[in-house]
Image 1 (tube, rainbow, N blue to C red):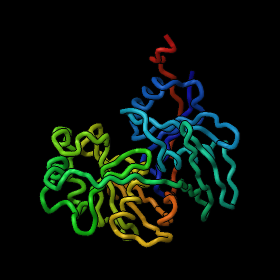
Image 2 (image 1 turned 180 degrees about the vertical axis):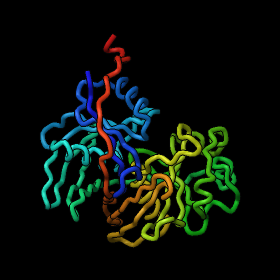
Image 3 (image 1 turned 120 degrees about the vertical axis):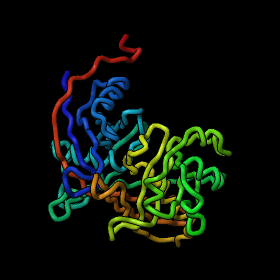
Image 4 (image 1 turned 90 degrees about the vertical axis):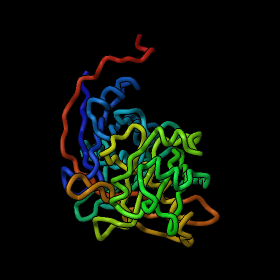
Length: 310
């Protein structure tokens, strides 16, 4: 059986920039093993599989990288929304339209709107972050990341474990040079004081940016991420926002930041992040931006490797 797919460049206004995401808008009939094989074949950072929703849920989303299933993040939501609007599975008017997606029991809200003829999508969520300050010391972090003693920021921000469903170690660095020199060492991590913490990925960031409109430059590192790769950061943004609130003493109220991932000369993403901080309420976060449809085609479903199919 053939399955139609679309390739969407996310968080960019220009084709062949941003993050490449594959979307299968009608994935009904595929099992986990088939989705994993397809994600490896597409070889994009994320492949989104769209299944029929229920009641007021427009669709259920499953997201796979070549290495395994991932949590639904802003990149995957924006790519799915852009594809479903293109295929007319989602109607959009000139007014803001709220669309509900799901991943398992989790409901994900997306706000769709047209601005100057462009479709903008925002992922909207309320999170209650769990923050752990028991982190590797600076010497351990230097070994884990392959950095020097002057690369890790210790005055303006602090390293934290933050979880909003998915745990991340969030490490502030002092320059973009350090962000791209950083290399994750599993051996050094296994020797660190925090090796027992179940963290699969590390988010490193700095205040130095390429674009004048952006406030921070972000990069994800991990055991299954190539040394020179810079995968989408959308799923880590809620945890990153929580770390800013905790370490920078942000006042209660509404805050807006612009974030960048990747280099302009290659594939750079620009994300707008709005959040409402209240000491007595959950953290409300909106992550949004543009997306461009660049390709479409079909693929033959691989043979299932699921035990159920035996």
